[in-house]
Image 1 (cartoon, rainbow, N blue to C red):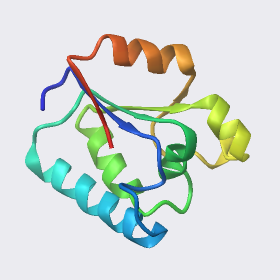
Image 2 (image 1 turned 180 degrees about the vertical axis):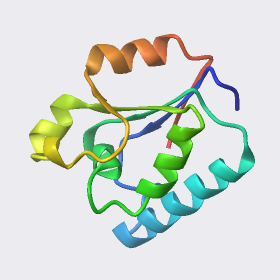
Image 3 (image 1 turned 120 degrees about the horizontal axis):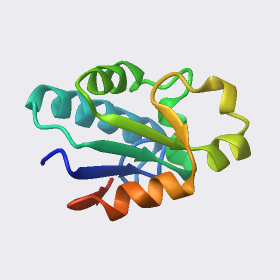
Image 4 (image 1 turned 90 degrees about the horizontal axis):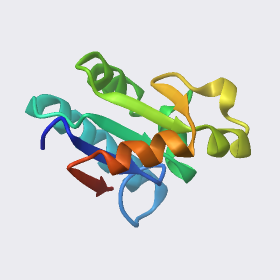
Length: 113
């Protein structure tokens, strides 16, 4: 993975599984991603994925550490507003769909998780 890669979270976790397993797998994935020292340029969050950047998320610490390494985290404002989570965002920046689209269009690869 290189800096021009983009990761895309559209769920509050990873995979099709019970919620607890999705969350557990997301924690594992992000911790191993951080330890790999091979980071994407951006991680995008929309639909239910925005919950990962909000208060109470079990992946917040890993996302903070990735952001500190230069990974840009962008969450969809429409999705946050729809879920009533705009004031619960704890990491990254709130963007809009044009920001998300631009990130995808400029990426060498988009990996949907």
